[in-house]
Structures are given as structure tokens and as C-alpha cells.
Image (tube, rainbow over the protein chains, first blue to last red):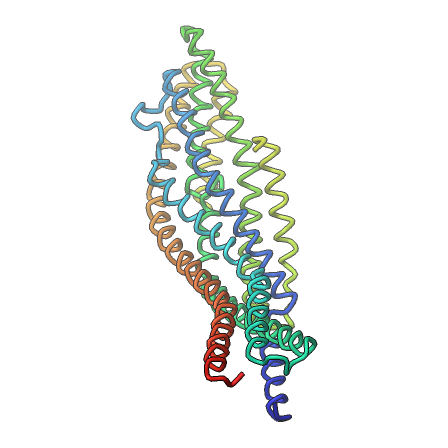
Length: 288
Length: 104
């Protein structure tokens, strides 16, 4: 190989390796991936749980002769309404999982095997003209250049995909925040309204003298359900909103970090903390 | 979210009044008002849920598209090793041809 060919090859290799992700970018993408996965997993579990809570509270309401109509047990929580949201939450979790895979994918084992095969092929054609040391050098160069190409392709993919997906991720976070907000005029406010209705109907049922023992017993079960619903809304959902807000900010930060290598994605650390607090809130309320 | 807060607070105030009175007639009258507030709340929620469902579906399509792009990139990464393997096989083939021709 001529000197100028070696210089060109080295220049290409340096250029390729410089086009990879910085440690900060990689960390930011990884954290976002984990958070998207956790938030998506949480949301896909939480919507069916909230639906079940609403149905259970309405069943009790009907049993105690309350104001809920028997045909409206899943009021505003139809199976199709929940299914659309679970599907969206699964998409967010899957995006997070794939983002982690893309960040961590090194192809190290595959490249090592390929460079080993390459060396044995070269060995067979070169006979004894190349020493073992020379063959080893060829193998490690092939392996290293392969690694640089993988790094380059990975960085290009992340820099193209993440900014493009960012508005959708952000919009989905907003939708989930509205649905988990107790006063967001969406699903969690339905849970809240159902609990308020049941509280009122329990109050009347327990005050009326001709309420039967069975109805009084059902009313007490209803009281327990209302308290569980309140805890879910004010502890778990409230923390999920904080985590989703942090996810939104981290998503914006990652886009900035990918376009500006000097950008310090400080909000990424807050994201991990919010996700941990969500896990704690879930354990506190429901021992999940 | 001001309307959501207002409706929630109004219902909570009516509930407190219900729980504070011992008169069953007053409780029933207050419950009628509470039910009216909750019916209006649920009507607004129903409209918002339908709108949000369409937006969820659109966002899901967008995120699925990004996931498909990541899958394609992961496949592309695996092609680097596959390309090296292809070159190795080509060298093997050359080696066999050269041997047949008595060149090595």
C-alpha cells in the first residue's frame, strides 16, 4: 500500500469515528429510551386499571340505589377508548426499547466473527507470505473499521430519527398528561367524577333509615373503592404526570444535544429521578 | 384546564355540604345539584375523549413510523458484518480459483 493510500484510509477512519455519538449524546438517548419504555409500560397497565376502578365503583353505585344508570357502568371508559390508549402507550414503550437497542448495538461479536473469517480467507490466499502478526493486524483493522462504520451509521440513524419522532413523542406525552390529570377533562377526571358521584350516593344511602344491611355493606365497600381511586389519582397519576413532563423536556433536550455537541442535557438526570419516583408511587399505592 | 378545576371544585363543595347536613331532604336536594354538575362534567369529558382518541391514533402512527425506521437502521448495522463476510467468501473463492490455476 502506498503512503498516500494509507493517509487517505486513516483520514476516512478518523472522519467516520468523529461522526459517532458523543458520550453525552449516547447517555441522553439511552436515558430517554428507558424513560419512554417505563412510561409506556406504566400507561398501558394504568388505563385498564382505571377502567376497572370506574366499573367497580359504578356497580356499587347501582347496588346501593344511587344515581348511576345500570347501562353506564363503563361511562366514558369503553373498551375501544382504552384500547386506543393502550396501543399508543405500547408504541411509546416499543420506541423506547428500540432506541436503547440502537444506542447499545455494537455488532461487536458479529464484527469479530466476520474479521476472523476474513483473516482465514486472506491466510488461505496468501500462503506463507504473511506472518501471524501481519494477519492479526489485518484482522484488528478490519474489526476496527467495521466498528467505526457501525458507529457512524448508528449516529446518522439516531440523528435522523429522534428529531423526526420528537413532535409525536411530545404530543403523546401531552395526551397522556391530560388523561392522567384529575382535572384534565379526560379519563382521570371521569374516575374523579365517578368517585364523587359514589361519595354522594353513599352519603344519602347511609343517611336513609330504610337502607338495608346489604346496601350499607355495599356502601362501605364503595367507600374503600373511592379511597383507592383518590390515592391512584393523587399519588400515582400525579407522579406519572411529573415523569411525563420530564420525558417531554428530556426529549427536547436530546434533540438539542444531537444537533449541538456542546449542549449539556441537564434535564436528563431529572428524568431518571422522576421515573424512580413513579415506581415508588406505584408500589406505595398498589403494591404492583 | 380551568373548566376541569372549576367543575371538580364545585362538585367537592356540594359533597362537603351534603356531608355536613343531617337533613335527608337537604342531602337529596344537594345530590340533585351534584348529579347535574357531574353529568355536565361527563358530557365535556366524552367530547374531549373522542377528540383525544383521534389524536392518539395519529401519534401512534407517527411513533410506529419512527420505530420502523429504527428497525431498518438496526438491520443496516448488521449488514456491516455481513459485508465483511461476503468479502471473506469472495477471497475464499479467489483462493480456490487461483489454486486450480496453479497460481498459489
